[in-house]
Amino acid sequence: MGNRLLTASVVAVISVAALVGCAEAPSSTGASSDAAGDYCARMVTNSGGLEDRSFNQSSWAGLQKAEKDAGIEVQALVSTGETDLAPNVQQAVDSGCQFVLTVGYELADATTSAAAANPDVHFSIVDEVVDAPNVKPVIFDTAQASYLAGYLAAGVSKTGKVATFGGGNQPPVTLFMDGFVDGVAAYNAAHGTQVVALGWDKVKQDGTFTGDFEDINKGKTLTESLIDQGADVILPVAGQVGEGSAAAALENPGVSVIWVDNDGFDTLPAKYHPVLLTSVLKNTEDAVAQIVTDDAAGTFDPAPFIGTLENGGVGLAPFHDLASAVPQELSDEIDALKAKIVDGSVVVTSPSTPE
Image (cartoon, rainbow, N blue to C red):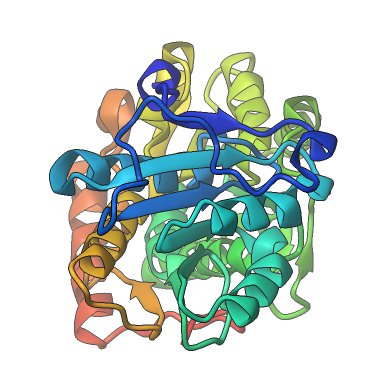
């Protein structure tokens, strides 16, 4: 996956010193944006980097899709730390491109400032809301899909305990966790069971967090602690940290992991396939591709794109190698529950539900 994503058009900006005072567009082997009328787009990652197996990677895949399908010239500026963020956004603006995509809450302030200073440039930000006439937020009601994941987890658990944890206590993270614990509760109500969800208290909006989204060892240590408490299905909402959960699951037979953002079966190393139950998907790739393609065609709307089960913006991945662990009756229940969420007869709520 990494080899496919890291093309010659990727620009890794690794030094703030190299950026200060630099107004030139990053070098590229792609199509030139110098010719009048050419359309180009730039993307700025958060500190998780381009191959985060999360929303940076999916967002970049969306720009690459637009490049392939619509002939849009694209480049990514990769942030390796907090001090890279604002300079990278400025670098993207200084490229002269008409569209700048930023990824994650860390880039909200830099995006807000750059959008105000450059009203003729169109921006989009993933997983965060910036209210400006030239910024289109791309957000997802992941609680809907996580509700299904929680129901699934409760249904396959052999220990009667499942768990979730996050990288940080932020709405895009806790939205997953709210849906997950509510899905567990829904399974209990439907089946008269008492499956316990560790790691998150929806009422208190507080739970277990590693404090970052990059340290895989923290994810492994925390997951081992949850396994020691009896959890046999784990939902890490922590970017790369979640790989530590998969590593811990491999060492503990009977434990499985639910990935987030993209299909972990595609983005994680194959050695983790035996422990991946499913993934809670955000269809960032298609959303980004459509937004930038529309902008290139002259259509821009700052109203937020909100991914839901109904519009295909969120969903559950296939069960892949663990399909045999999911009884057909349970799979059918999940399909029926999805239909009820789509038609509004079941409403999934969270303090972080996007509007």
